[in-house]
Amino acid sequence: MQQIGVMTVGFEQPPYTDQVWPPPHIARLLSENGYVAEFGMTTSEVDLRRANPPDIGPKQQAILDNPDFTFSPISRRSIPQRMEEAR
Image 1 (cartoon, one colour):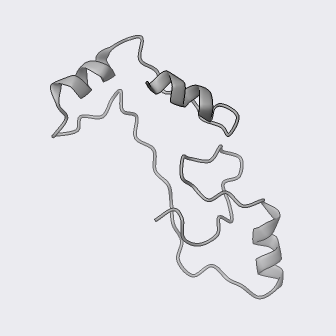
Image 2 (cartoon, helix red, strand yellow; image 1 turned 90 degrees about the vertical axis):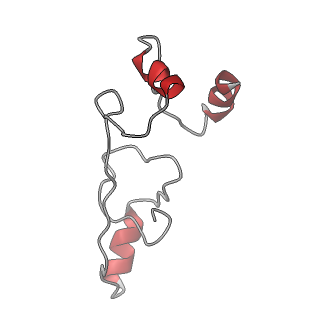
């Protein structure tokens, strides 16, 4: 659902993976040309260290319980490095 529409607020936060991220001035240009927001959307965050998903397997839980496991920010520059680390 994040690939529809145009982001108009929230530019103070970094984008999420697979989130369309237009330059902030696009919302202003659209508004100046008569476009109005019709269907607001929100991105939510879940702290997986505190979440209690009902259908998580023992291997997935072991990863989340491992104190050495961390979530790392991804940027265009770091994608190749992150992909290497995932191997």
